[in-house]
Amino acid sequence: MSNRGFFLFVVLFMGLTGCVSEKLPPASIYTLNPDLGAMRASANTEKKPTNILMLGRIRSTNAFNGSDILYTDARYGQNSYAFSRWGDSPTTMLLLVIQGALEKSGHYIAVVPYSSQSQSDLLLESTLIDFSHHINDDGTSDAILRISFNLINNRTKRVIASQEFISSVPASQQNAQGAVAALNKAAAIVTQDLIDWLK
Image (tube, helix red, strand yellow):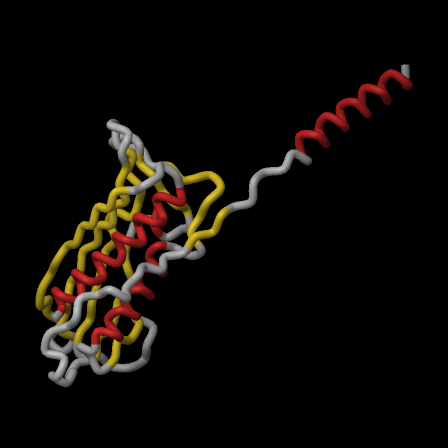
């Protein structure tokens, strides 16, 4: 009786070991690094900048504060790609992209993050509304980046202007790789539109 119990234990253990040792594919890590080399030339480049711009933290839902690469295939559904993720949260990556582009624009003495101890003339607040891969019923798909901005005068604490930008870029593939490529293009478009609006 004890031999039979031992035999069953060994068989069960081997079965569980086989399940555990089944290898899962390694996760693919992606980054947001849009091509900003082809940005439109800025007008009035001879005018010297006079303001310091501070970038506020990008507000968003929890979905965009994590590293999941999200896709939508139903009206109210939102899922993430199983074996792919961002290297950092979309809010953090977008903030760094926007800061770098605004610094290169030459429109400001400096562009500083919200954690800076320096004083600033202007504050740019933003809210990320969508940053995901939308799969359509007709078999096509698009990367959607939707973000709104408020430009605030730091001296008067008044909103100078508000604007929402939406970029929809067709994705070549209905997978994480296609989503990432299209979202990078959407980020480049929105960044250029933001610079033109602020100018």
